[in-house]
Image 1 (cartoon, rainbow, N blue to C red):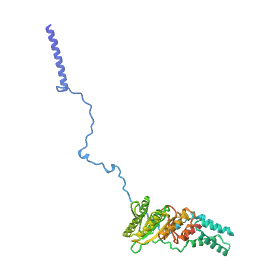
Image 2: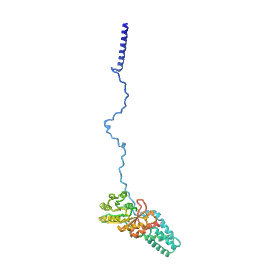
Image 3: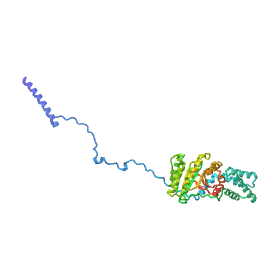
Image 4: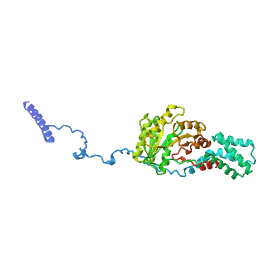
Length: 381
């Protein structure tokens, strides 16, 4: 029995020893391996020299384009501008011209017909006195000549209108430098007549004629005036002198003329603030601007800008301005927007100064030197 127990014990010992030997042969060590972990995929770090590499220019976000100065334009010369705009003027004045031609072409003219002709002239803002003068002259010539053909009627009417407008008036702008100083042009007028726009368009007329121009933004009360004038100047390469909003207009005008002398330009154009002709203080200030300019240069032109659509009310404005500054010429704007072209005759008779410029549209080059014969031809078609 004892031998049986010893045999069993020996068998167990041998079995356990065999299992241990078997495990050692598999691991090659005396310790068990931990179960393998799931591998983590990693990307190799870039070499040290590559970390400092900057992305190529093509991969960078595009930079904003630098601001570019506006391209300088070369406006057309003043010669022939009114002829080019003649069709536009003819469309607006067709009521006046065709009405007169139709009346005068009747087989016989009664007193009522002549009254109708006079009324048509007055309604076109020719004025009462000039209208009566034109009718009297026409009536006398028709009576002497007798029955007239349509061509004769047109010729006769043309002669009378040209004579009333004044073909011999001096309409040339004084814009040439003299005595080592530039010519100085002041532009004046009430609010809303297109004064600043006329100043900018005039700069284009002069640049188109080959002159060097400097602009003075002396309208310091209207915030947009200086910006507007600067835009006009940039388009033709004209320098603009301006001051802070609300600054003294006379000082801005003085500095503009001073700068014009230093730069040796041909013409300095001063845009003044729009004034109500009923405000005495504002009108006195306009006289001050002119006096301050004249401390260093002569004011060669004072152009009064009138809106043709205001009709006879424009004559009241003109009279007051003429009392404060010596008006040398009229710039008649918006003439394409009214059939009352007779304002040219009445304003000249009222002031004794010629219409020198006419505005015939909103385009930048729609300001033209006035020509009496071209104007009448446009009216008559």
